[in-house]
Image 1 (cartoon, helix red, strand yellow):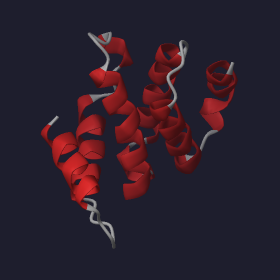
Image 2 (cartoon, one colour):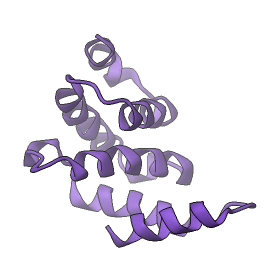
Image 3 (cartoon, one colour):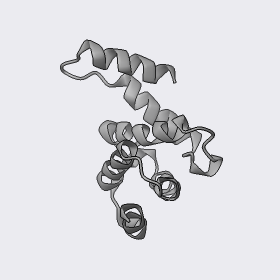
Image 4 (cartoon, rainbow, N blue to C red):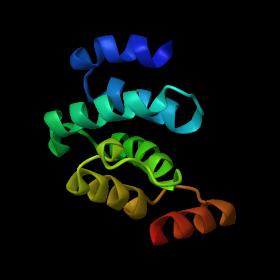
Length: 113
């Protein structure tokens, strides 16, 4: 239901709204996520990389990574490689003001993926 409602409005989403929605779908396992990811990826590509700041790119990366970690994701669900790489790089480059050992370990693992 959430995916369907978001799909209807995604053409009007700004970068922040798109990134927040991507993050939400990255952490929620929902049966209708696939179709939404396809629409979200297309909208993000349409908006262009410059539309997203570092935090927003990190949110997108979380969604893209969750899709990539699914067993054999259909190619049409994957965002364009340039967008995925830029979002992955934003995650790798992120240096928080405070970092725990756990966060550093998780970041190192995500960077290797």
